[in-house]
Length: 126
Image 1 (cartoon, rainbow, N blue to C red):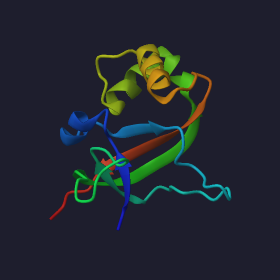
Image 2: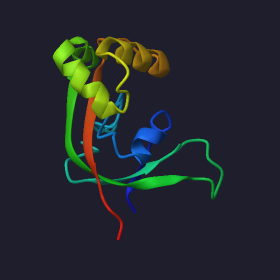
Image 3: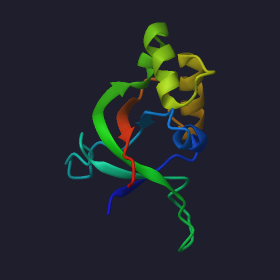
Image 4: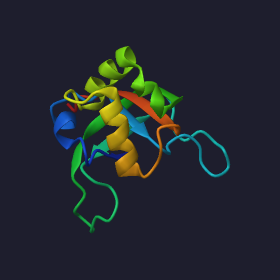
């Protein structure tokens, strides 16, 4: 069974299949410093993963990781990079700086944090 990954803030872009990248504070190594996500991994996108009562999990669809890397969040502040990445993140109306502000506010972090950038493709269920 694939591991669940939440898309609570970007449910609609996920459903529309316009979101192809997600940044996370974790999702890199476990406590024993073993990689926990790699290119090729399958994940189940969900509306929300934590605090869900039994039977209440809403699955959005299966995705496959195509690239995963660590990078500084403030890389989004570079206009060329940030403007491309906000579209991939599902926030086409934000600038890179606005995305960083939103991310930091929601995740209670700062722009100098290293984040895990997960690029993925949608796996069509047959």
